[in-house]
Length: 337
Image (tube, rainbow, N blue to C red; front, side, top):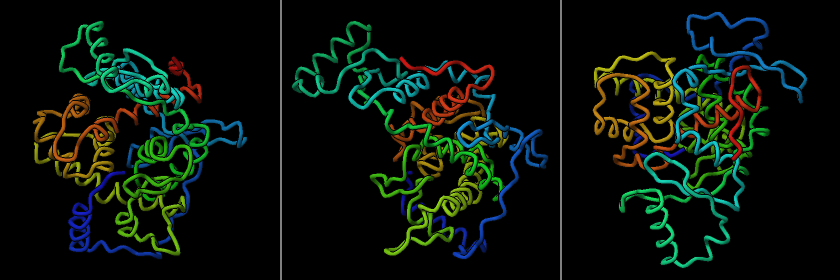
């Protein structure tokens, strides 16, 4: 998760002024009970998205977030989402070629053969794809390697129930727990190139801000429940308030359980509020709906670049893949080609 040092310094100062002080000893609240026969009753309607599914391996019912709005908005039909679902099934020795604007797949190559080409040959190959597909000369042809080894949903699945419970125990929308766990470290604990670590891919400043110990002797970002507490606190105390602040400035109304709002919060979680704000200022949206997210996919500003644009596309693709894996009623089959 890419968040910048200056952003955290400003955030920490804001929290301290407001009287929010990290507490390293802060306990994790008691887990929310499993939902077996009915939805959790609460003043916060985000819990209405939580259903129960039977985990065959664990031989028990477990909580799962099912967001029907993904289908109501037709997200499963969008080329960008279809593209990433295909990448999630593609082995690492292969790659898909697409044009950047819509992520439409135009070719599949074996990486060994591609890497054997010279730079000049690769340019000619891309030019031929532009010609065959009637694309303008300036259209970028991207090559994206397969990520089936990374998006291992069999390994991610057992943690979803635990993450959902941890987020609800901290009174945070569990939708975010599921989305983060499916795309940040779905296969194993690992450290990103920018230093994020753990199941929720927290940077050191974020972890320390919310009371986690990160030093030479201990790194609590690897502790699932402690990391879930820090991640949910980051969303509750920074990401959601900052998202609201940005939208209020633009005079855009919102509902916190709308898919587009949740995805916008995810962008703040990944790229930082300053970069998301810069992108929205370029876009100048006049109303809050899913077109805000789709426009973000084609917008760059400050450090909001390709990886930031892809983030909500990956979240949607992973949600759809997990739904398909669980064979929930009414869901389309997983894309495997």
